[in-house]
Length: 387
Ligand code: NIG
Ligand code: FE
Image 1 (cartoon, rainbow, N blue to C red):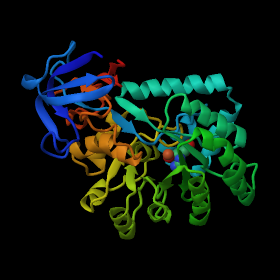
Image 2 (spheres, helix red, strand yellow; image 1 turned 30 degrees about the vertical axis):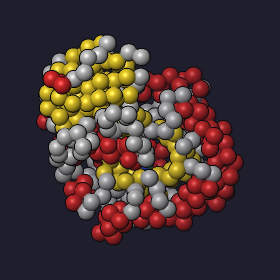
Image 3 (tube, helix red, strand yellow; image 1 turned 180 degrees about the horizontal axis):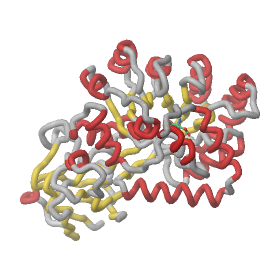
Image 4 (cartoon, rainbow, N blue to C red; image 1 turned 60 degrees about the vertical axis):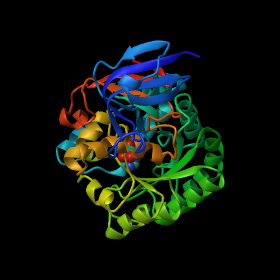
């Protein structure tokens, strides 16, 4: 089994407190050894062991590959007209989802697969090496199952979001029966998680609880879209039901923050959505100061956040959410891993996956310091360079 030494690393972000100081466990003038897709050794370059292959990071920073724990990549069409209207002053509404549902249902599998592949490529280019993908633009038994089957070709972190909105052809009660019955049965074989959009114009707390419990009874893990459009019950419901993550967390009360701080649910912030809906940003500072684990994700979708750039989300998090650069980088790596209940990614330590990003900059803080600049110079997944 050949070993690969990656050296000439100005700063290695490990996210492992045992490896170095600070939140990011940083090692200066570092090197890293990969064997069989895993990290085998990290440390000072001058102490690195001999390896079969030697590669240079070119004096850049190296960090764990980004973990994007929230995307909606399987869809057809776009919503540029809706975005343009919003930038002219119209508010964002959950109802726009129906436009994408119609386009997605009409698209053949090959088209959906090719479009998803193109977005996955964009995510990889932005340094994302672990991707969660939700359904939610099919909203029929057949279309939810096929969107999840397509998502599964790209990741094991697939999420059934049949409870995105009630599609126009259904009455609410009948749709909930469908989602918790035949649709869940068809989706579950392709999904690891279940999600519900618990917000104005989508599903209320009782409906969300019913769907969440049905998914959990089928063995799916829970994540919720919560408190995006207004304060509401979603975040506390997520904590009560032991969800891995409550996503958006834009409008939080003190009781919501308290519940997150005392539970095991990660707060996943999606600043691309506030950017693209011209909404107020969530307050990450308040969450971090209360001891809540925070993740950052792209929320890539055609309606509220059509970005695949994790560096863009990091820059927004620092400028608009009150995070330090180190906190934002940690949230986009270790935070995302926690939101997916994974301990093999989001960290660079012996035994973990050799998924990493090489920057054309000496410190991960440059991701916020140089916003909008293409700093991702290399991406490695399972010990192999992807680009
Ligand atoms: O995470 N909030 C619900 N779902 C998506 C947006 C869906 C859409 O507008 O198409 C989100 O922002
Ligand atoms: Fe979303």
